[in-house]
Length: 96
Image 1 (cartoon, one colour):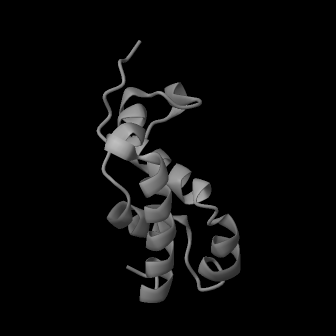
Image 2 (cartoon, rainbow, N blue to C red):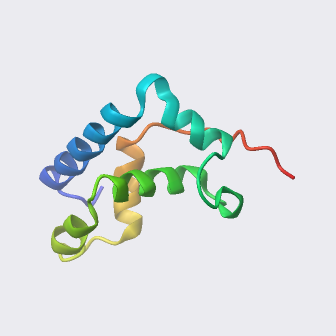
Image 3 (cartoon, rainbow, N blue to C red):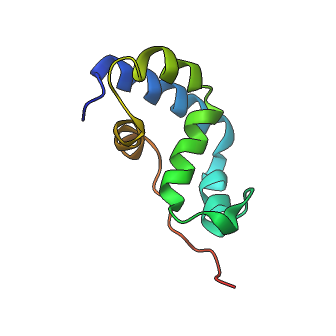
């Protein structure tokens, strides 16, 4: 993983705070698995969408532009870290 241990710890702490508030009884994960979120019908990679939605909801955009991108990271590097941090989601959406 290209992300530094301190950056990883910061991102993880912020996402874990968010999950503690909004994922009681796995409710948030289950909503995503059902496709109960905006523009779900357009999503091809549910895990990526879930990870980056958590990243943005944790208000880490400024941290990314101030710290992560200047350190040479790109979205692929950030996603690798997010996959290690975020809960796994299984796509249970019904195809129409």
